Picture 1: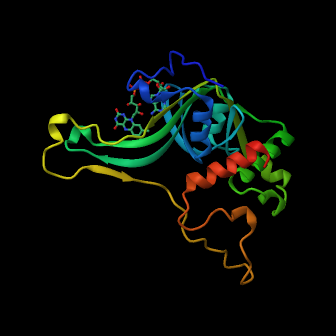
Picture 2: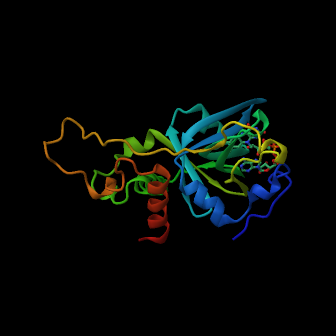
Length: 234
Ligand SMILES: Cc1cc2nc3c(=O)[nH]c(=O)nc-3n(C[C@H](O)[C@H](O)[C@H](O)COP(=O)(O)OP(=O)(O)OC[C@H]3O[C@@H](n4cnc5c(N)ncnc54)[C@H](O)[C@@H]3O)c2cc1C
């Protein structure tokens, strides 16, 4: 599947770094957990960081039923969602050729609130499962009041683009012989030491739903594997 480049998604700057391939776009979305949602209310732009998840060609986010952001978006206003992974610092031989390696997505649509209680429960369970496969079977089901206290918003991706920089330094030929260091410093978000809740009986092992979160593992790898498992039903 391909998203057709449109007037708003056709990359003009470094177009060779852009992709409209749904597999590329979904892989970047599935490797992430936090997005930025840009929207305009009464002429004022907002850009709100929040958690999200994907189900097919739709993306979802949630929050307090009293959220001003969700209230505004429930009215079907235009939203631009961005997701960014920083993969490296590129240290060139001139200030101009310092850069960053990254994977990013911009996705456009008009979100709507999920009013149906069953659909809302399904969506929020999917969010938990997307992070911790099998977790909904380990915890109690959400109370109706808990579901009422939140709003869930879903957005069909109308069009989207990915942009990827995965390269070394683009120094000028004339600068290569100059003395001084240059290189790429890879970066990643990794998992720290798990901290069991102090109220747990001592020695209780962590459940299989969090087994993938081992110290030093890349978070984007864990999220990708969980998303693949969820999308394929594995
Ligand atoms: C971590 C990170 C750091 C960056 N740092 C800089 C920086 O310091 N300076 C800078 O100029 N640029 C930076 N960029 C690139 C920046 O995101 C834009 O691609 C670039 O500024 C061109 O913007 P534009 O509006 O002229 O793009 P245009 O090419 O006019 O954008 C047209 C369309 O292309 C698509 N597009 C453009 N950029 C992206 C993207 N990043 N991801 C997905 N789709 C995209 C969108 O659909 C957009 O609507 C960075 C990107 C990332 C992810």
